[in-house]
Amino acid sequence: MIAFYPIKPVYIERILSGEKQFELRKRLPKPETKFILIYSTYPVGLVVGYAEVKGFHQSTVNKLWKKVSKVSGIAKSDYLSYFGSNELACAIEFDKVFRFERPFKVAEVRQGFTVPQSFCYVDKEIFNRLKRRKKVLV
Image 1 (cartoon, one colour):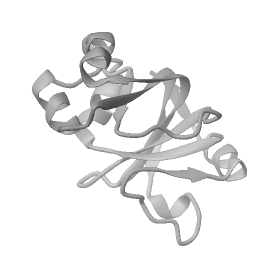
Image 2 (cartoon, one colour):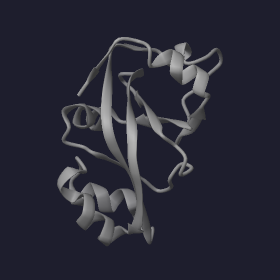
Image 3 (cartoon, helix red, strand yellow):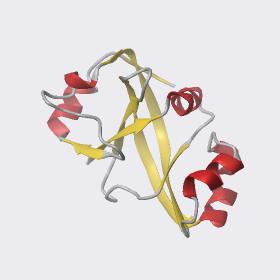
Image 4 (cartoon, helix red, strand yellow):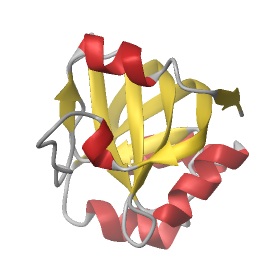
């Protein structure tokens, strides 16, 4: 499975630099998700790359922070603010990350496609077409 994730530009930069190796979320996609298609939100508004999923992690907010803090690309105060009163925190661990040489608009994913609030799934055929674009392993 392939999940489409909108991510703030500041975190996109950290993912592409290798500083951020985990995407933090309040819920995880299905365990059979193998790739994450990465969309940089406003003001960029482009699909910038994709990542192979190495694994999924779910734990208490404090335990997950201990595991991911050095490669999460986020300050502890922002981490705690994001998870708020949640007891559990989730993280998607990236294996390999690819940056498209020419990021593209979300309309190129498929006609009528809109950016989800959290995430959505993308058809495997669509993803295979998109990943044939020129890309760079980061």
